[in-house]
Image (cartoon, rainbow, N blue to C red; front, side):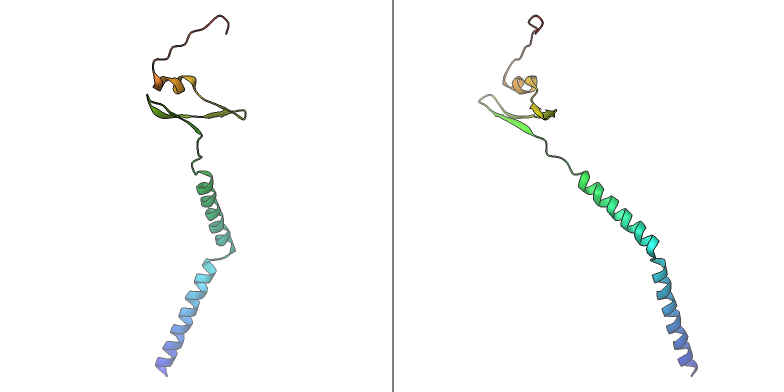
Length: 97
């Protein structure tokens, strides 16, 4: 009978540990965990690299790509970056233009 009572108290002890584990995972800790998971998911989604537009030039002198910059909904290329790989480039001001 003594062994049965020890087994009974052990079973009761195990149940109380299970109950304690369930108490540790209450609504506030679940909300905290859910908030962290949502934060992690949003960081992963919004930090993914954006694909940058490029303009590619294929010529006998060189093959290269130039980044396309968008301003106010219009795409622009850097003129110097576009022409420089093809040879010598110079610029000068002609009056007010």
